[in-house]
Image: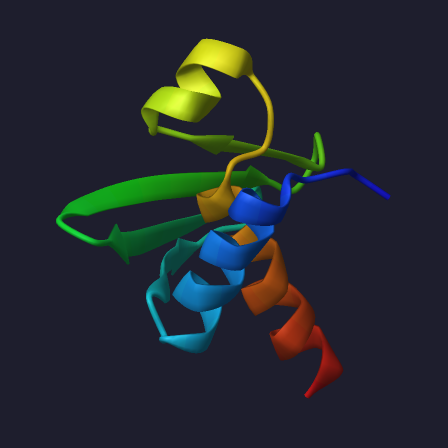
Length: 83
């Protein structure tokens, strides 16, 4: 299980619970999400074949670590799976 900072977990949970995660498109290879975070919109892509997430936010670009947007997208996917 990945370790996230408390701040990242709180922000991801807020994005998820506030309905800020939206699945834009799903293909055989990828799922595209958009997330409205405060005054910005970010885009997350889940590559099904590689089982990897990417995000266009500054944090992910700089650190290459999962951000709150990716964690919120994972929460959204888990909720859909559990339905």
